[in-house]
Amino acid sequence: MELLVRAGEGQVVPSRTTLPVSLVVRGTTERKTEGEDIETAKVSGAMLSFDPNIREPLWQSMEEAKRQTAYGMEVCDVLKISDNEIRWFTGEEDFDRGVDQLWREYHIPLILLSMGSGGSRAYCSSRRAEQPAFLQEGTIETTGAGDTFGACCLHYILEHGMAGLGTTELEEMLRFANAAASIVTTRRGALRVMPEPEEIQALLV
Image 1: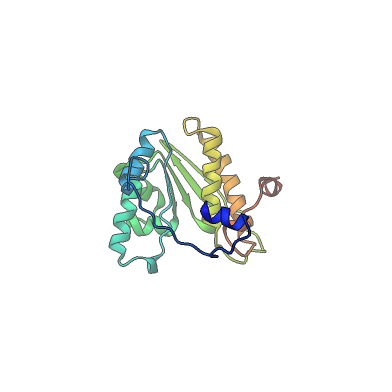
Image 2 (image 1 turned 90 degrees about the vertical axis):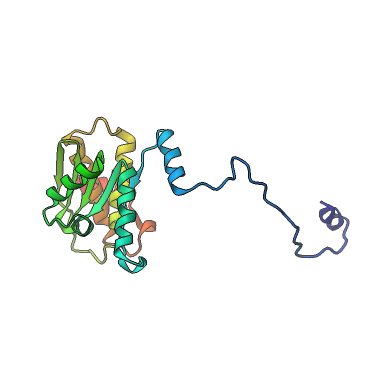
């Protein structure tokens, strides 16, 4: 405040001033562990989604990657997993058997499986839905396609809720998400090139 007053009076003041500060840790600034954050979210009724998005060069070992992935599966309500990731994690080539293994081990309410050009599947309780991919001649790269697919599924769930997801709703959700992911493959970039809802609906017509 003193510097502001002096500047207002036309006096020369330093262009940069560093003031000593200290942090007083109380309830709102106390550092929490990741587990505590997740527990707080669950108690608050939040829905937790998890996408392993495994990139091998980013891990010191794939054993550690598998351990961390298992933790994510233990706490999530919605799992988005790709075909190569479910093969890696479960050792199963048959996706239905791989998903069944995840269900028995982690009891995940909704599992979304993206299979690239093979389309996608959704597993919710005893229901299984599948939709083909939208293959386009203008595809140039797949960066961001999985993120777009997952985001569209979460958007659908937030609008319709989890409880009312029958086979028809799951198919509708997958079809919309597949279309959106397809559009992204025709553009360079990732999150910044996600399509608007109107663009997706135009492809679905």
